[in-house]
Length: 375
View 1 (cartoon, rainbow, N blue to C red):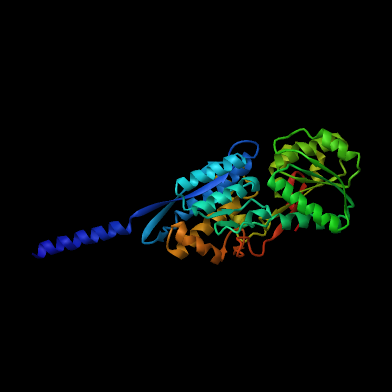
View 2 (cartoon, rainbow, N blue to C red):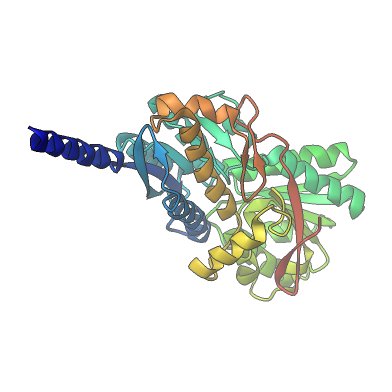
């Protein structure tokens, strides 16, 4: 009898240990352009999320009594809105617990409805169009300053610091490009600048000679470009070819990359660039420089702009799961609004509409081909 009892106790202990060691796989989605002209941004974003998942899996996190193993499900939206909504639906069908992304405002805004309809929260660390949070979805969050901050900050710098009077506008007709250009234009006009010309292009174009020639005839002090670096690089080369080497060149976070220096291919006009990005410079982020060393060791030469934000976004999702003691989006999503997370990029807390509280912004120029923060 004693032997049977001992065996039963031992078996119960083994079963208890097995239950304690039960591992639950929790998928986190990530979406960005992993192909096409903007793939360098997408890979950088995916790297940030992958690095976060790797770090989280070293923490032996237990949620709801189960040890959690996180896996990243990365999807490619090719910076295309239709592909973006298809990727979002795929992640919904895969029952991921949350999503980090997307990169472009033009893909994030339509995808946000898909995530709302299937009840999965998403956090973008890159899409900056203010319209993203206007529908009031409880599943939409942003951990970077929006275009209202970026466009206005650039306009203030152009008028107050550089005393510029005449600006020409170019945008790529995307949600991001139009949005940031509109904010700059509105603020610049209010500050007394004159908009001498407005031209439009696409996010696939590489030949800008016609529109730049038209702008040259208007004699602007500056050009504002709403768009991304695959267009900004060739545009800077063509500005030099047209002898417009004294014209200042403004843009938002879409051109504020290390890649734009490569794409400008030695054009002296790179030195005229003034760009803005949401958040502090790496040097001023609480954990920026130490994090960047680890990133560079894992992904040499791949850093662009947003990977610290996708890293933090992944941690913010998991922080809400831990506080809710559940990986179920229906349970933990409400906890995102109570976030007070000290991340690499800063302390992350949200406004009721999902916007970041107290967002910061950094202006940068290019010196000797390298992006250099002004503030």
